Every structure is written in structure tokens, then in C-alpha cells.
Image 1 (spheres, helix red, strand yellow):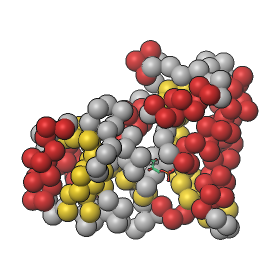
Image 2: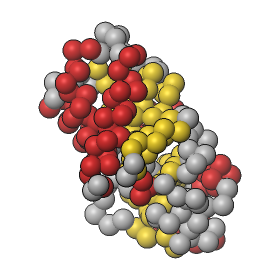
Image 3: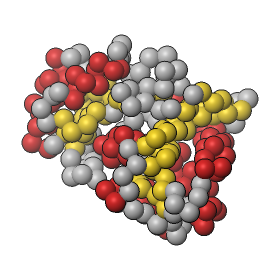
Length: 222
Ligand code: 5RP
């Protein structure tokens, strides 16, 4: 199977997972990226069965609206029963690296407001230890060099993601050569660097359910 076919399989599985819970009051939290896009496209066929969605990026909001799904501001919704999103890396403990699409801050905020986080990923995203994928850090622009120097002290090789401005008007530093031994502790440590808006470790609020696309089918871990 191709990677796209595996992503399609987990998007189908996520729809099956939430379908029984949809009703006219349901507002879903929706992530960002190619796997989330496949899920959005499937959701379109069910748009009459739920109220709408909160999106974690402008790109996802636009895609939802193109399908005729109403997008609500998170502040008007409060909590969402489900947040469905992809990941760049995910472990057996359902810790993740996210932010390859630069949407990490809003993804983390919507995930924080979700009763259940359903991670949908093809098998290539499954790792024993986080960090082979460069960890994204969103920084306010004037703090970029300072944050980069602090990241070097922690052992990372920080690289400015040139030409990328996040939906919040900030910049992204990607941390290369930075294997994460303790995701929970490192998430806190990175948050404590002044000028960091968000780091791409999703450990304190990891996923509740992982739907992993593999050659022999979708594996569910909860
Ligand atoms: C965007 C993300 C995505 O979830 C992550 O990059 C995975 O993307 P894809 O589904 O395209 O592989 O965190 O900021």
C-alpha cells in the first residue's frame, strides 16, 4: 500500500470511530495536514449529522468551509468531544511530535479543549523514541536568535524554517539531531524558554486513541 492509501485507511477508521457519537449539537475539533485533509473530505458526506467544527489552522478552516461545514471560533464552543489530527511522529505511549505543517500552537490549544484526541497516522510515523523528525518550535520573531542559542545549550541543532509565518504571525525553528529521552520533562523545559510560544512535543496532552495505518490493516491503540 502507498502512504496515501494508509492515510486514507486511517481517515476512514476515524470516521467510523466518531460516527456513533455525532448529533446535531456536536462540534468537532479538526487538525491540519494531509491526513487531516483526508478526514475532512470524508466528513463532508456527513455534514448534516453534526453542527460544525473548530479548526486548528486557516487551511483546515478553509477546507471545511469549502465542503459547507460551519467553522466556529474555539472561544464560542468551549470543549469539543473529539479532536482528530495527524502526527509527524508517535510512540506507543501516544506521545507525539507535531508541527511539520507549522500549525502546532492552534493544534495544541484545540487538543487541550478536547475530551478525546484521536491521532490518525500512517505506519511510517510510529517510532520507538521521538526526535528523528526535527522538533518544531514556534517563537515570536524578535526572540528567534535567543531561543536558538538556548536550544543549542539543550543539545539541539536549531534551524530557522525560512519563509514560513505561522497563522499567529510567528516563526518556526526546527530542532535537528535532538532525540527526546523524556518527552514530558522536555515539553516543560522548552516551554520555559522565554520567547517560545509552543513546542511540538505533545506529551502532557498526548493522544487518547491512535489509529495507525499498516499493511495488514488499521491498528487501534487506546
Ligand atoms: C501540522 C501537523 C500535522 O499533523 C503533521 O505534520 C502530520 O502531517 P501529515 O498528515 O501531512 O503527514 O502537525 O502542523
